Image (cartoon, rainbow over all chains, first blue to last red; front, side):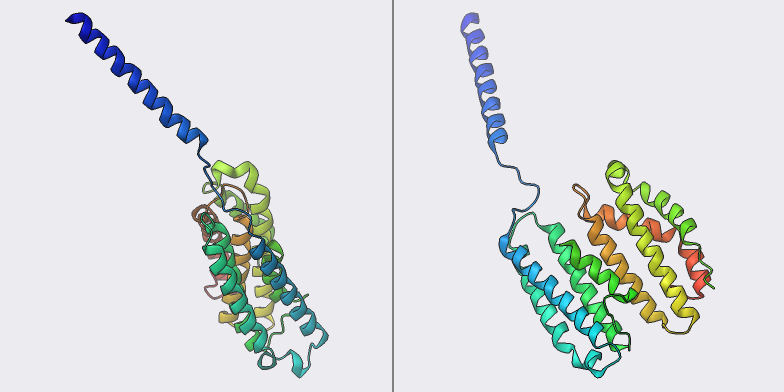
Length: 142
Length: 110
């Protein structure tokens, strides 16, 4: 009787060890992801966005002091930039573990929006203007 | 003639930001120094523009916000540094210079 009890305890102990090893092996084999996978479409869209911003700042620089550089003649750039960034954000949000990239896109969106407000008030944010520096730093980050 | 001493501000900003970034300080201190320098330059630019009457308070706040956003995004590129830690570091760095900057500019920029 005592021997049977002893065997039962031993078998249950072995079963516990096996199930523990099984769980550990599953955890060990699982692909734990801390950041999102590389997304080629986001990369391409951001590169195209960078070009758009650089082209805009070059255009303002060439037309500094002229009507062409005034805010009211450049609203199209701001509209397109906002649409581009919203589309990039939607794509980024579809990937899991992408919070940092989404936050960076939000910050870029906010900087475009702030630059637009500054542009409305006379200031012309050409490439060398201190006003454009935070936007350039952010755009070059991606 | 600007009143704000950016290099003195930078030292205070760095020591204030050290606590929120302590776990990653060896990796982040260089980035933090570079970003706080940019924030300092933005404040100096604002002071100069205000002295010649070319910037309103609202425009100054927008400009500083743009620089803070750029610095936030750059600090977020450091591996393992989260959104909350970055925000805490920037807030700590700015709160330690708030009185000096606001007094020199004669309006609450920070």
